[in-house]
Length: 596
Image (cartoon, rainbow, N blue to C red; front, side, top):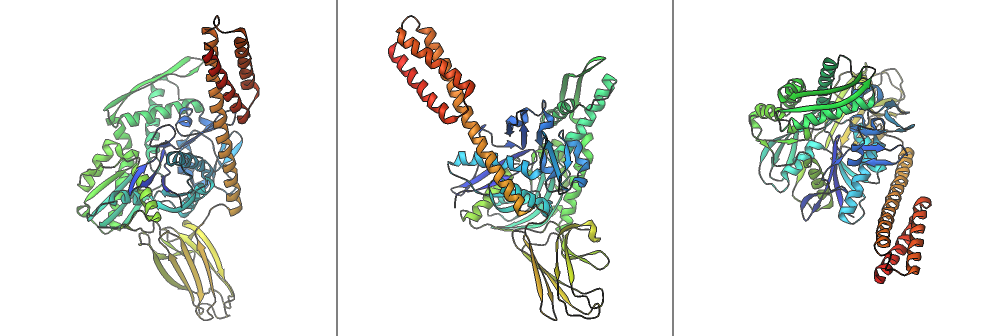
């Protein structure tokens, strides 16, 4: 077994880490950063970029630059309409009814686009560790549904990773907190990320971390704060210029980018200037935006959203049957937790100092690495007891939801319920498995269904069908239905609900492996071309500097080498041929230097 890495696949930025000699260590990417922007960009020639270089083209090429894709992971198109305004690229309905992104005439699912980010992290880990990486622990928001979790697992598989565990982000942060600690305490993890919000209440008793309750909102994050500031800036622009902001994607993206920068700057400054000269030009001439945003204005805009996070915190305390007085520490996670107003309100709610001993952008990846270390056997003495994030049950008579395992039940868990037939001599019973909190079955998330057949004929209501739910520590659900009279039983394992088919997953995995190989070949070609270009410049310098010193045969050989190199750069795309040329040019350079 190689090194298992821990990955925080974030909405705005992603991060990965691993355990080294019992201590977590963040992996540095190719650009020297500790985090990687979760951005995928496509150039006009089809070349693909991931990370910082993709983020740099966002303003000039918004339609072909995908960001915040986590907001659409594993969700149906019809469920996401309110989030379309948060992004500048076109969201369309895919063949399965899920969201898809159309880029240059091709549809990409959120799991495919996330796989590109994971491939970038995988390569960074391999370069950093100097060995192949094939296994990972990936984190998700605590309130992700099973379909969203499975889409994340699919993304890892497509990227060439065996995803050993999917764990909740607040739980990962708690693991980072309890690692190498032996202090008993009750902590609240406040996780306000770029696209989602979660809060978890945990009790730590020496080497056992038990999640007591978790709450969250998958449609509340830093992107929503950006949107409020964007709307305010749009209003200021119209007030100053007398015309509304046009719908041009480049113009809109410039203003989005300015709103995000202003939000970040207001975390350390009390005011910031937004200056966008020549935002667009129309028949009346150029239009500019120059406005000062104060922290007070920003705080007034976001107050309602911040209060929504505090309401989730109060609900989590209620679910955990605790009061704020029982919370010993509050751990802040996610980029939006840096906002001064957020910190002030959270501190006021809990009446406790905030734990700022962790980097909010890295702590989740560090916790994932600790979980990876537990799987490898390198981390001992830490026991994690997580909970179900939603209630689980079945559809019962009247289209109602029969709850078997309530939310916030400690894992592993098991529950039973008896159901019966609804018509005389009914020979089969369909078991529809659901996840959610609504008493109406159709308002919850379907996890799958199966049938128990060959039931002995009997008047309705007489047969006794015992339905058993079992959930293991990994969150994998086993559902069994058994006819208590005949002993007949059927079982279904729900470890891949609402995901794509195995054939499609294998196809996408193969496609992305080919793309990764093509990317590696393209990088190799670029590197060797850059080497030859440098050698040409060096040889041209030698030619100019020693024109009157070198023998005519040396000058002719030098001139021939330069012509060959220039022609190869124009016509050749074979890395092996270009490598041979680079070796040849190096020999020529050594020969010329030896002659002068």
